[in-house]
Image 1: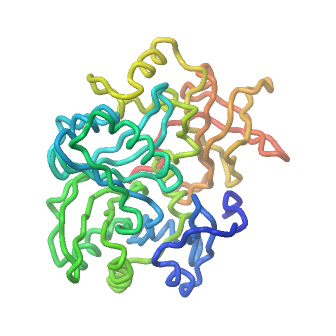
Image 2: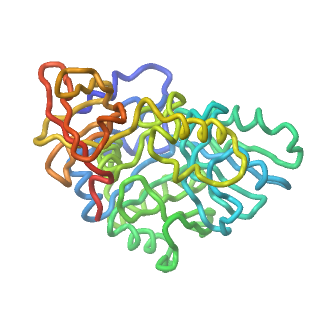
Length: 369
């Protein structure tokens, strides 16, 4: 599997606390969002299939999280995020967006509600600094709310696959059967406080574990003893794409809104929030581009930035993500195209440089267990 999207390693990259373990395991290390990260160990295909069939372990300590606390936090976050937070129960963690005033997506994130006055926001590595600045900028008038960046204090591991529950239960020595999807709870391991959520980025049953950075190596080692196999960014990308999940910087950016991305179900609450008026105006006026899933027969894939053509050769858009889908046996991807070419069954040609690949519009997710 080609890994061309990862460039030569620049100087000054950050390393997670597990970096030496990755190197000792023979991982191929690559730059990602300013971090030196493992892209594969045994190989992308093997790690992908192990996640689909058993249980895989991902180092996601490059991601960041913010703690937002204090009187008025629920009102503040309800204005800043697209999630319907007011009807959310404690212990729940929905997916949503942080938007600019014009509706452009600053980040996609998960908001963890501990209580109405205590929240954790889990954000992407490459957008974390800007996210924090945007949230802090809008703290004015919210004197009771505090905003804390957990970078350097908290780490994160993802345990994903059909056998993930057994692995995490073995770690905690607790039954997790009652933990529902997009719910979380507090546990302890070897004296360290853990937040465990039933969430993930693979389309499989899975868990995300948040713990003090110093405890992350012990958790990693124990989960491997319990049968979890390390997997890298390569498999994480093919898994998320099969599951139809967006990647920030590809499907999502400040240049598009949830309207173009077809994700207004995560921004449809009936109360004011930053960017809402822009989204409503965009919905009324219509969009120039629409995020659209496609398939290509065979193994050759389209890649981010490839141009999309109509049958007559007219340029109608661009590919955001593309890959061979190991679970399906053919190539899949997403592209922004003109709405007239986004209907089910529409056919395009994708210019991959040396040839044109025939593509057909389909529905996402591409893979569902």
